[in-house]
Image (tube, rainbow, N blue to C red; front, top):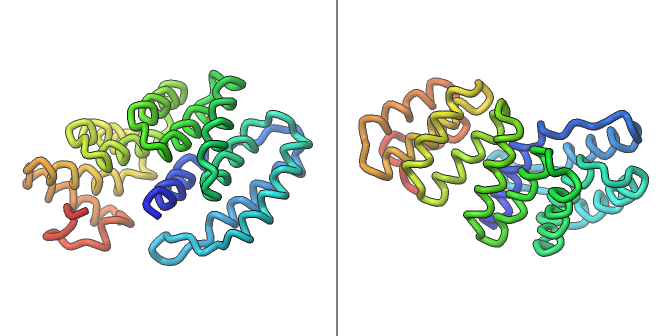
Length: 221
C-alpha cells in the first residue's frame, strides 16, 4: 500500500510534464482526460478509490491509443504508471527503460523511469534518473519537489534539506509542502528551531500535509 500511495503521489507530481503533440490529437486528448479522471478518484486523505476493473477498462482504451500513436512518449509514460498500479512492476520497469532508450533527451522519460525503479527499492538508480530529469528540465518545480520528498522519505535528511530548499526557491506550486518536508528533515536531525519555523511557515502557506499535524507531532512517521 505504501508503494501504491507513493506511485499515486508521484503521478500527480509529474502529470504536468505530459504535453501532447499534434499527432493523433483526438485519441491523445481523450486518453489524457480519461486518465486524469481515473487518478483523481480518491478519498479526502488521497487514498485511491478506483477499482481494478476501472483500471483494466482504461488500459484497454490506452492500448488502442498506443497502437494508433506509435512510440508517443506521453502515452508510453501513462502506460508505465498504469502497469505500476496494476502491480506489474517488471513490465513497468522494462517499458520505462525503453522510454529512456527511445527518448534520451526527455525529462518525462527519466522521471517515469525513476518512478518505475522505486518499486524495486533501488534508491540510487531512482535518484539518478530523477536528477537526470531535473538536469534536462531545470525549471520544473514538480521534479524538484519529488526529489526533496524522496530524500526525506529515505532518511537522507541533510540532502533533503538542500533539495527542499531548492524546491522552495524554485516555484510556488509545492512551496508550502516543501517547507513541511524540510521541517520534518530538520526535526529528524534535532534542529528543532529550524524545524518549527518551517512547520509554521508551511501551515501559513496552506500546506496540505501540515494541516493534519500539530507542532508536537509533525515529525513522527
